[in-house]
Length: 206
Ligand code: SF4
Image 1 (cartoon, rainbow, N blue to C red):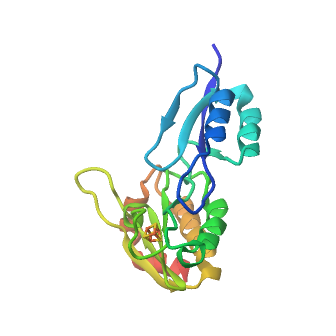
Image 2 (image 1 turned 135 degrees about the vertical axis):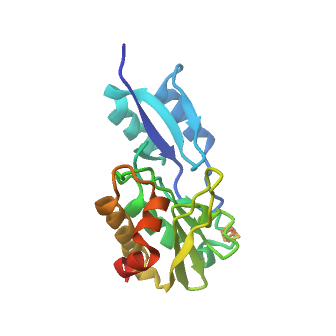
């Protein structure tokens, strides 16, 4: 029996949100084959089951059609961004596009969701993500530790405010690196934040 693996497929970060072109959906279906299982995840990625030996070829085909391919499972998900309804400039499309390739697809102790909202309306629900970035006029606020699941669901807490654009990627990377280095086993990020404290994380980012 063929060994199968899952890949995570997402459209690029763009005005309008997570939009797949019809040709891209055709490409996904054709590359995966008629019997493939394709799952819609809650974090705006499609999980596509593909034969392990064809994984790299399929990834190349999908990337040629403008799609992005990431590891599934215990890794940072691609940036869960808003629709940029206020326009590229005001909603910070450039910042989100710079952030996504830096933070997506990194192996982590537990899956990590990073959200981005282009304004304080936060329609992409950044406070329900492990790490939430919110653009506030010309700077960024970062929230950490959101937990949307279970009966003890809770909002992320404000970690940093008024961060300039040129420090955004390094700040989020510092949080991810610290989590990778200090999590206990498969400790969920929200529990990790509670254990190490906001103050400790603020020192890491500053
Ligand atoms: S977060 Fe703000 S900019 Fe982004 S889609 Fe929602 S309202 Fe528009």
